Amino acid sequence: MSEESRTGEKALFFTLGAFIGATIALLLAPRSGEETRKIIASKAREGADYVGARGRNVVDKTTGYVDRGKEMLQQQREQLTAALEAGKAAYRDEKEKTKP
Image (cartoon, rainbow, N blue to C red; front, side):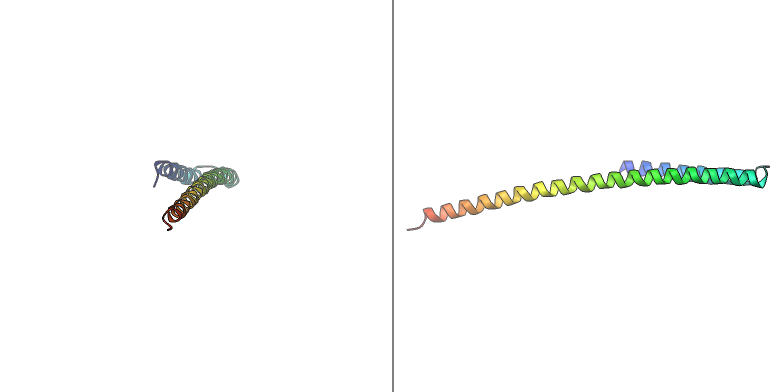
């Protein structure tokens, strides 16, 4: 697992823990039920926005890695094809030279 991935996981767990802690604090705070529900709804929206943004970030990075991998694979394929063609041509040339 990469260091960047671990850092992202730590941030996610920290945020999740903070959200859970804030929710518990709100539930135990001496406020009216309506006010508490509004605060919880607001925090839930913030959490959903955060998770959505992180998810989009992961998708974007993954897409970038996949695209780079495809490009590298295509380059390697082209190099291998060129090397095989050069080898075949060299073989044919040598075969023609050794014909009696």
